[in-house]
Length: 87
Image 1: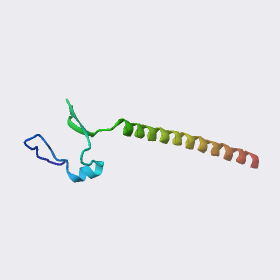
Image 2 (image 1 turned 45 degrees about the vertical axis):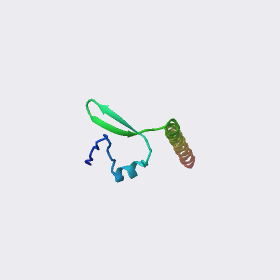
Image 3 (image 1 turned 180 degrees about the vertical axis):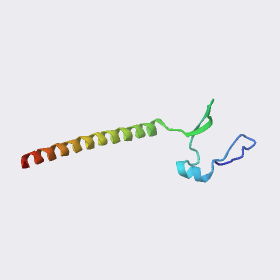
Image 4 (image 1 turned 120 degrees about the vertical axis):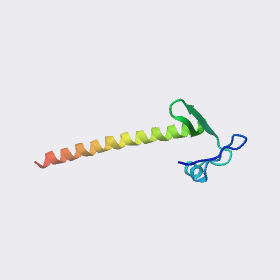
């Protein structure tokens, strides 16, 4: 938990540790959500380009996982064939 002050212009300063952790730099945008049950949330603003990059990366990871799963199954099938030939 971090406590920050609100300036007379309504500004708050996000502590440097948090800015470093999330990679926020001067001029970056954030989204402030007033959630009725959970209070105020501050989230990074994602441009269309960055959002698409994240989606592409997740899609790539899923494809790699699926290929890996298929390859493991192929290896198991080959092991079974070899085992059956020996006996």
